[in-house]
View 1 (cartoon, rainbow, N blue to C red):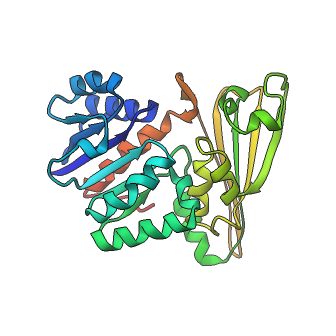
View 2: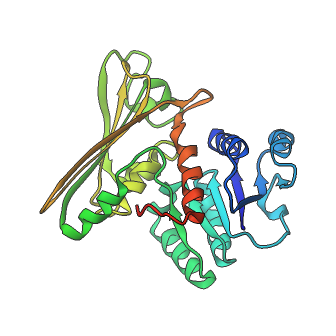
Length: 269
């Protein structure tokens, strides 16, 4: 039985808890949930056997096999190396944090010290197995394009770059590499980091961010070209009602990753 902790406060955490509660995974035990004080009662009701804390430092129980990070980049910076050094594998969702080279290296060193692993979560996109494979065939270029309705870009740098309320069609409002995108769009561009890591790296991965007034869904597209093949993949998904910046499929990715961790039939990706 693998013991699991969940670190996070938002829609992804709530959706993950709800999915696990309705479809339990054999071999997985949710032991710790870290969330805001206003959510502790609801989390405890779903998992009465779990320890529910408001701050991760409040947990003093047995070591956990897996910790799912569904919080923010600051949480990765402050807790990621400690979690890995303690021997827990880390399911990482706030991938943009790894655009910081120093933190990236610290995380790898902590994982080495703790004999643990950083598990990169694909979030609301697919095709990472193909992208990783093409890296061994001489990747020439990788483009990640994120398209969302204007409301999903509210509260981000996009508001200073484009008139979101007055937009009628589809507009590319930002072009850069994955380093800049991951650092400037902390809550929206984690997927830029996810594409960069198995591909050509942060500096060489190109990113386009698009606001589309005619779209109701979030869309992620990878276009990668190598010497022997071209990958062109797009995945569209609905955002959460309470947070349109995040796609509902992200929580399903977490559950699928947990299933794979204990499965006898494993899908390499």
